[in-house]
Image (cartoon, rainbow, N blue to C red):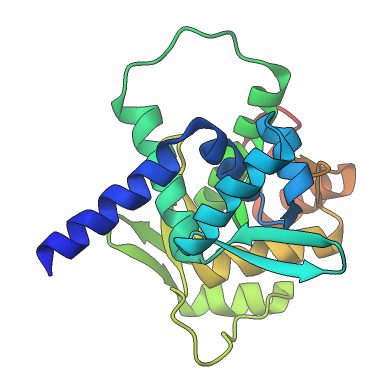
Length: 238
């Protein structure tokens, strides 16, 4: 059994460790489904090469695929896979020596606000988590996350659907270590529901097919009034 587990770990590590596959997996951490053609363009490889890579990732159950007419749409297979990928990113950012590379506008935008699979991350995600913790709506630690009774009442009144579909293996509320801020943001069902609600309100919006999240003017006002989070694109405070 131990030998089998080790072999599986080696296989997954080899799949994720390839530059082209890692690039495609990172793109899918936006939570959106992308076609093979789109992923080939993002990884800057040919369609045939991308197809080979994607077939391996699907076979390993790291990705799922849905076929519609002539296109195949790929997405991260499960929250567990997304958590593994984000953990690798966090370890790479915190534990390995920094490479001296100039930061781009895209890098800064990702650090300010992005999706971490299906929940909010970056300075925005951490600021929201901090505000909910300060109000004692949520408790976050290395052991996990807990939504308090007051937090349940507040988020329900805010419009979140906190009832998980059954059966569900998904964690209800989880602390997720943010690789750029090196602090916690909120993941799990609560984090995903919060992200969906803010998008639905028009407070935040996706930036095309990337992981970048933009905060709208109405969102700046709403977050300030609801949570005391004061921010502008690129800056955050409480």
